[in-house]
Length: 208
Image 1 (cartoon, rainbow, N blue to C red):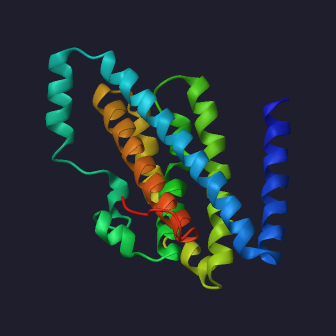
Image 2 (image 1 turned 180 degrees about the vertical axis):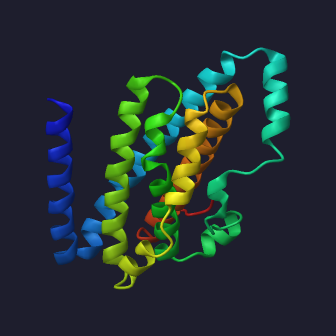
C-alpha cells in the first residue's frame, strides 16, 4: 500500500468515525479515544527513540554541556497554557485537555518534517501527527458545541515557525533542544489524552 493510499484511507476512516460519533457519541467516543491514545503512545515512543539515539551519539562532555544549557531554558510551546502538574491535570475538564492536546500537536505538525533523525522516522511522524490532530478535533466537536471555537482561537503558527527554524539550524544544540521539546510535548499529550479517555470509563483508575 502506498503512502498516498494510506493517507486517503485514514481520512475516510476519520470521516466514518465522525459520522458514527454524532449518532452514538459515548460508545464511538470511547473507541476514538482508544485510537488517539494508541497513536500518541506510538509518537511518544518515537520521540524517545530519536532523542535517545542523539544522546548516545554524544560524548559525555557534550551531554553535560547541552543539559546545562537546556535545563534552565524552556520549550517555546510552554507558552501554550496547560495544566502545571498532575493535580491540575486531573481537575481539568475533558474539553480543556483535548484543546491543549490539539494545540500541542498542531504546533509540531509542520516542524516535525525538519526533525533530526533521518527521513524514515520523519515520514512516520508527520502523517501520524496530522491524523492525530484530526482525531482530536473530532473528539472536541463531540465534547461540546464550543469546541470548534476553542480550537480555532490562538493559532500555533508562531511556535511552529520557531521549531522549524530550530530544526533547520543544523547545530547540535538546535537538534538537541528540538528533540527534547518534542519528546516533552508528546509526553504531555499522552498524559492529557489518557486522563481524558479515563473519564469515559469510571471503572478505570485515573490516578497519575
